[in-house]
Length: 352
Image (cartoon, rainbow, N blue to C red):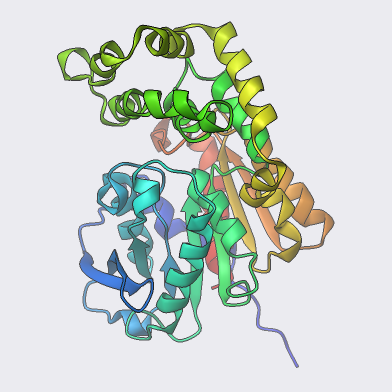
């Protein structure tokens, strides 16, 4: 039997890059509210996107978990990405993950993704039958890779793509703290989530201030609008001194990371690291990573690519100067990078 020839990735990626770059506008996509079933009594809010005048049940589906943003599915960046993907001829769903919106890194998110994806897979009013793929970024991309290595869902996914995601959790933890002074967003989240393994009482005391400093970063709150410094002043003197050192003392921060790392259970690290799950991953994978990403090192995507390549797994890697971590560089300023990023998107689409 003759195998169907896959489309040229470079050609398949052109429509998304044209929207991604702003050369074409994405205002023609439909955005509607829906829900996905989490249990018999619980549902999760979601947004569904598809091209105007096209019925989502006739389109391939894309399951798109949002990144670690306090705005969740209302974040303009995830909405623009979903619209861009939809206009390329897809039905795209973004479920609202409460714990991710609240900046919590939890193993339970993996099971939640499995449950929500399975409900979406069965919802034939939302996509074409048996034609669903996965797309995400950063920490959510890594959690997604772990999700879709699980036996309940791994054979249901046509294609996967992640942008700026990690392979090894501990290496990423140390890298983000190393770049804390460039962008402290990920570092603050990691301290807020894992300090408790070293000192639970201290974590509980610092969480309100850590959270507000993180939100200050996310919403670009400065001056009188910034809430982090106000929460810092409310702390007891000892806790205030420790948080001040975390924020402004490089050597102290590095020692904290070493202490926390030594306390985190090894099994938790395995459960949060795609590296330990790649042997069970089934779908073709496209990896895109910014060469100057200050949050997750491009070496993380290189490790994923090397691991899967050694297993003869279909995988494509593009390291690009067109993105940093969730942000894009104007195409006209780095025109040489356009073909590569186009091929990365096209490789993902070519398997759908």
